Amino acid sequence: MSDDTIRLVTIGRILRRRGRLLTILAVVGALVGYGASLLIPPRYTTSASVLLPGAWEERELLTQAEIATSSVVVDRAAAALGWAGVDGIELRDRVTAKAADGNIIKISGTADTPERAQRLSDTVAEEFVTFAAQIMGDNTDPEAAARPEALRQSVAKTTHRINELADEAGPGRSVESVQTRTELAKLRTALQEAVDRLEKADTATDRPDMVVMGPAARPAGEEPPTRTQLVGGGALLFVLFAVIGHLAAARVGRRLRTGADITAALGSTLLGAVDVTGGRAADRPKGGGARAVFRRLLGVDVRWDIPSPGASGDDESRQIRYRRVCARLRDRLPAPRRLLVVVPDGDEVARRAAAQLVAEAENDSSPDSSNSGLLVLHVVGVSVSRPMVPDRAGESGAVVVVSAGSWTAGELAGIAEACADARHEVVGTVLAGTVWARPTRSSGRPRRATAPVLAVGGAAKGGER
Image (cartoon, rainbow, N blue to C red; front, side, top):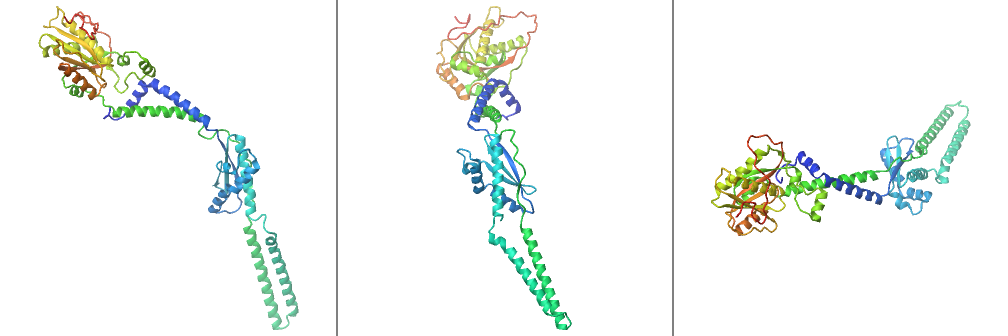
């Protein structure tokens, strides 16, 4: 797994074989999300729109949006609302404004209830319109407001004086009087045009008042993240972290999976591969204790990073594999053929394979067997953390039975060193795997008893003297 590419089938295998653990983690994540929702109060947001009539440039609209959230406007809104414990500083974090298309400033307010959010947006919009009207000149200096009127009166007096001078110039019987009256008429016309242009300029600079486009709509739902989103997000996040953790653990794992790697770690040769019928239950280690019960409840007592068991042949084809292993052992050993079958503790598949191998050796050593010589197998379990093999007592060596993907090179090397320390030569390795059983086919040949016989710490039944 450490060198394999992560594929969808790997993700699917995690979901299938760790379904119970992932379900528990999803529930825990949902509870964590629910707890977070209790700490985060609900938030509701709504907006009030303020229309700015007339022609406005983009930078002017941005300036008005900044004014809408200024401290002056927000402080006035806080005073108008009169909420206990809520001042302008806190409201600044709840109020936002932005310029929209059509000379519209959208003022948004956020509160813990829909009613308060609606009232907050409306109040800030009203205070913004009031403040903007003040700074745009609705409440200007009275002297500045009286200046245009004084200018109009001065123009009127000047025009009246021009008319008097025209009358004094005479009816226009002489050339000089005609020229004088003509010049005065031109001066009067130019003065009137200047006054008209001044009035038009004053009218253009006076913008219409801003308008609040109705009350803010009452929000129908919470702002994200809602309680449902927090619960669902917590469950999904825990499951995602669990899957990533499984993949990371598999990538850094060093368990050996091929026969060549396993035999190299043990310093022996591969005698053959045998099959053990069953599904995931066959890989489940035996034993009790609180830890084993806890692992069984979580569903982590079965390896997930090994392929699913494949379909095998019938009982006869599986039996042939055990016979061939026994035949190879007899060919390798001198008489008397007594061997120690070493099985790592916790390897349930290897333990079942060793028991079946002992039963096959006993059947082949019966008087009616066509094979010459006896093969006696003595099974012992060895702890991989502190491997200890019984001292040699007439055995010709040891054969190690392991399952693929269960042990690291260091653990297997420790078993090999324990065998060498007890003066047992590792004559070979048997690789055990799990397969799905098929219906037994009929055969004209009578079947021998295949009940597994397991001898731990003593001689196999009918095997040793």
